Length: 68
Image 1 (spheres, helix red, strand yellow):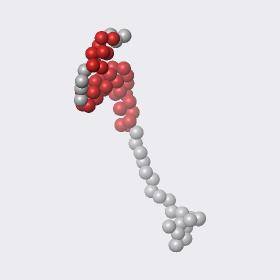
Image 2 (image 1 turned 180 degrees about the vertical axis):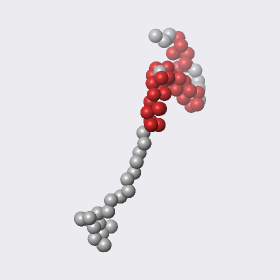
Image 3 (image 1 turned 60 degrees about the vertical axis):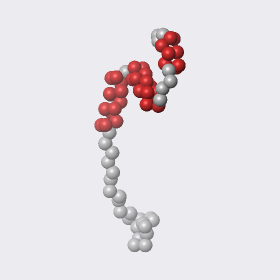
Image 4 (image 1 turned 90 degrees about the horizontal axis):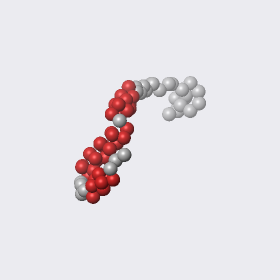
């Protein structure tokens, strides 16, 4: 486990937002693990989104020349 003195030293240290985010990022990375983070980022990159062309309506709203 983490030594309580280390936690107290970090809590008592005055820091700006940038330093806080660095500490938070390192803590998250150490808890989750480097391999898990890289796997997650790789899964996000591999997803492909396709958009199909709209189909022409043959009946109902939009089928006539006055429809939208």
